[in-house]
Length: 250
Ligand code: PEP
Image (cartoon, rainbow, N blue to C red; front, side, top):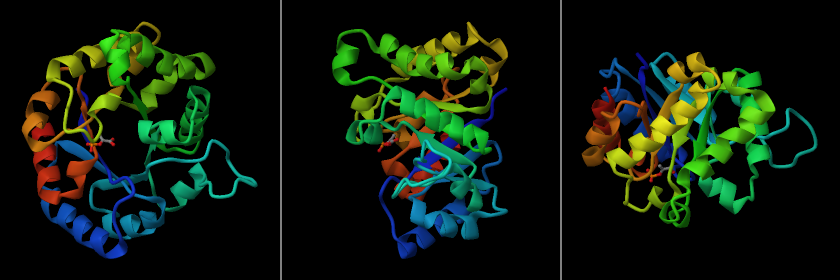
């Protein structure tokens, strides 16, 4: 049985003072959850703070991006090894807010995925379709292409040590979550696609749902067979709401 995983994506929110409060609230409220793994993905400058406050707590931390390169003259970039220096164990890759704004190609995302794994970080690969693509009925084709780039370059076995997060772009930050059935259907498709190439990687692969998850819809979404947890944006900035989502996962 796959353990549920709930990942907080703080995006570009917070300050040293605000994070101190929020992480203290997390620490106060979440340790009672023995059945769900919790991860907090903070902006780069706050990795040291997350490490100092969360180590030995049972809550893991990570980043929201990394460089596709290991080292070199890449001004402004942050490498996988640097994330490891601050005890990060997860990294979000290919989030649509970045992929769109910074023109990240599927190939770029696949390279970042391998950089993460090569340095012992678990990549959280975001995939998902736009509203136009869903309305045109091509959402599975779109998600398949995003996965195929990684499979073509690196094989399907890499999914044994990875997390995939299905994040329909139309659901992120809009308050309009996918229904539990819509999400389950895509999760089943993703697992089936990996299973066709590597059954054991597919069986252990955690597939999260992300996009306007809140304490109300979390119960139904997280009860679905192929939904192994959530990637939570807005509601992760409120410790009480985040705790309720974690409880729904547990
Ligand atoms: C996200 O950005 O990954 C996300 C799911 O955001 P929200 O929960 O705010 O829709």
